[in-house]
Image 1 (cartoon, helix red, strand yellow):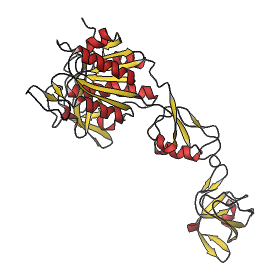
Image 2 (image 1 turned 90 degrees about the vertical axis):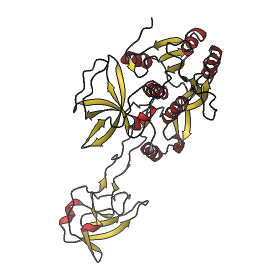
Image 3 (image 1 turned 90 degrees about the horizontal axis):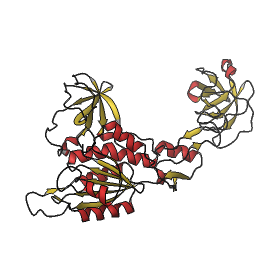
Image 4 (image 1 turned 30 degrees about the vertical axis):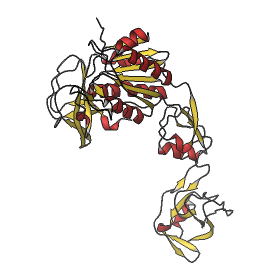
Length: 406
């Protein structure tokens, strides 16, 4: 008799694995976009190193704004160091990005003065230190600016460039092999020869999810339901990849051979086989020689939901990324009773209105776990935990935002 575990237990088993990239690589800065940083980036100096002008204007001593006129004694373009020193009663025309002249403490903008011959008259006063960037305003020497595990985006690229870092060390991506099993399913381009055959989408949907999460992928296609074919598939995939994902062949049918191959032929360490979730209760996870095998159900909706719940977090874990599934609170617009003692993931529509997420089920089809079209549009998954109560209209609930997956 198979021992089913609950959803939280299954996540804990995967999370406890030592499953992280053993190798790192150096990439040129702009080639590292969307990759995961493999070390803490620490500021090597202050930015700015000296007080700097934040606007075009006139560098002055703050108290001199009370004077009738302040004499202009020099110009201070960006990229140059002005030799003139600022005393009381004089100003230096200073441009954005220029170092503040020695002796100045405030910059008064051009629009706040009137130029009269070789002097300025202050029309509108400014506070002490106005438009003057202090030493270390951007960052201070020794400060950790970007932490290990950060996914590198445009802001990280900009900060790294400002530190004169041309190459950045990142974790290597996981390689994920994907295949669908079943003698009744056809790959793209294959001709149907009898009415019982159906077109497989699972392996391509899961490949798309894996690529979006940052993994390299190997598409293994469709494999027939026989032990030798499945054994050859899994053995080959384990040689080439860090994670192997299959769909189909893990239930209790006479032709569900994937579980037999993983357990008997490969002698893999089974983490779990059977989780009290809907959809996807017959899914299986195992480890073989440090590689992860995730065997998912065959129905399209089931395999997709389970790939989101189990494959994506393991890709994040392998890369050391500080990414998580996008689970947020939302307000539900109808009663939604608890149907069974399982963790249930139900497709819904989501929108953001009046500073909160709102969900409904308009247009969502009811039926089996084969209805992948329920994930079109602006979709989310309503999460009902195995110990949850009936949901009432207006309650706040947990949802997983499908269009915000990373």
